[in-house]
Image (cartoon, rainbow, N blue to C red; front, side, top):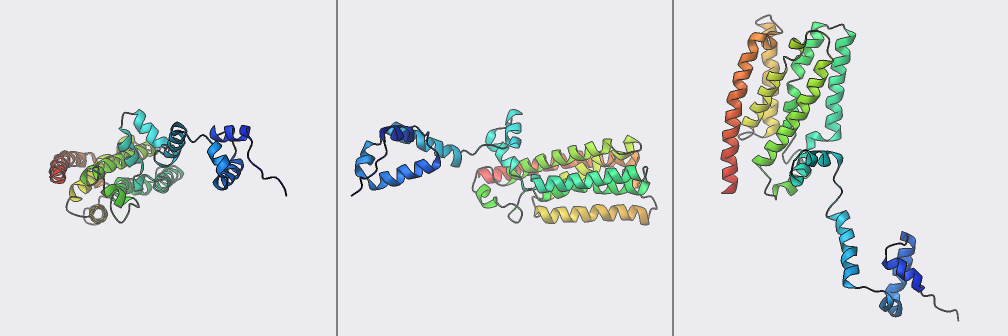
Length: 274
C-alpha cells in the first residue's frame, strides 16, 4: 500500500505566508480539508485569519478607485461623493465618446467648408443641447443601472441629481469650449452658444423638480429647436438667437434660474430631511 502524501512543513509555511501560486493553494487546501492531522498543523491563529479577511475586503468591499475618482479626490472632493459622480450614467465612456465624435465632426466640417455659415449655425444650435442631454441622463430609474442602490443612501434624491448635473454640465461645457477654440471665424460668434447652454441646463434643473428629467430635457430641446426655426422662418434671421443683443437676455435668464434652482434645492433638501 502506497504511503499517504502530506504537505511538508516548508510548503505549509509558504501557504500560511501567502507565497504559493493558486494551483498549489488549491492542492494544499484540498488535502487539509480531508486530513485532520495536517489541518491541526496549519496555524490558523486569529491574526492570520484577520489578515486573510482584510485582503478579501480590499478586493470585495474596497475596490480600487478608478482614475476619475482619484482625480476628484485629489481636487478635494470627498471619496464617497467622487465615487457617486464617476458612476454618473451620462459620464460613461460611451457618452463621452459620442460627445467627442459630434464635436470633432463639427470642427472638421467647419474647417473643410472654410467657415460655411450653415455649418457654424449647426454647431451653435447643437452645442446648447449637449449639456441638456447629459443632465437628462444623469439620474433616474430608467437610465441608471444602480438607481436602486443609490436610492437607499442618504445622498439620493435632489442632492445626488444636482451633484451629477453640475458634473455633467461642467464636462459638456469644457469639451464644447475646447471645440469652439478650433472653429474658424470670429471667436465671439463661435462662443455664442455658451449662455444658451447655461440657460437650458439650468432650466432643466428647475423643471426636474416637477417633471422627470428625460421629459423635461425633451421639452426644452424641442422648444429650443422650435425657437431657432421660428427665427429663421418668421423673422428671417437664422443667427438671431446668437446675436450680441440676445446675450443679455440669456444672462438675465441664467441669474433668475440660478435663484430658482437654489430655492428648489433647499426646499427639496428640507423635505428629504423631514
